[in-house]
Length: 109
Image (spheres, rainbow, N blue to C red):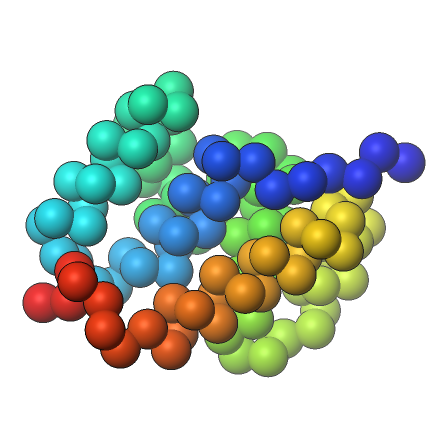
């Protein structure tokens, strides 16, 4: 089985899902610009902010990131089953931890 690594589109999708509740206009604008540079369409951006993806591995990455906030291990097993490697899962968990603990965020309202 091919071990999938976290790519820029999925990383941005994870960050969008983790920061959706901040509502800071500057953050949303920066994310939208980054998404456009990566070739993401409006539906993909909306889905990412809602914690969803149009592909299986992206969906599992988002589930893992959002589940990591609640210490859910079910999502980790599903991520492995979808082909996400240890490195990708660890990076996703680090992103989730960083966004959960980020108190000095320049985008906070």
